[in-house]
Length: 209
Image 1: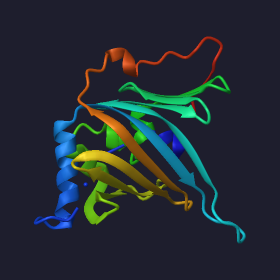
Image 2: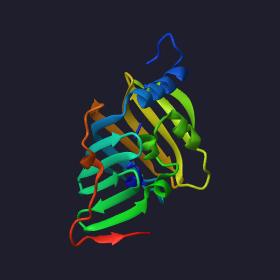
Image 3: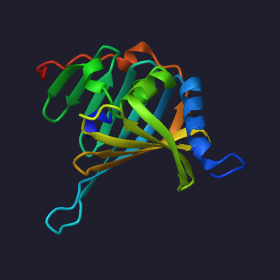
Image 4: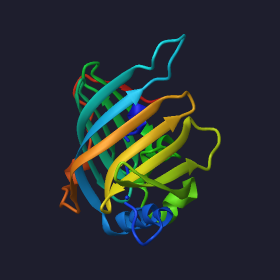
């Protein structure tokens, strides 16, 4: 799941909380075409045999450009990158010097990464059933459930703070929970085309599953 989180997309007021999250999501997708942020991701496995679930935390940077381009660069604890160039999804494990190359359309499907890659709200609704969720932790939330029933993803909660993307909470069919928090978000920065270009390093083992 981590490698597909690559990889996403807010309090009560006079407007009911159930309306705010969807409104923030719609405004975000309509008004924000490029973005850059830092992120921290915590993945918690389900408890087993009476033991508490274990958590692993990683961090890095995230950039996206609609439609269909994004990049996650994991810096800690291990160097990895996920790059979607519009046609191909590249996953680079620096320590292993291994690159996995997949057709982007097949690799994304109903995954959290689609929240960054989708061209607009209509494209997102084609893959997910969207509904507002109650305001929590100062954020407005949207609950997204994949329409496809054969994938690993169960649901994604998308959190917004003052209309800006702040968090993703992802649950999969194996009971694993992942939380991504975004900070220092820059909206609509000028991103050069080279941002989403990837070339396997010399000597890297390229896998095409």
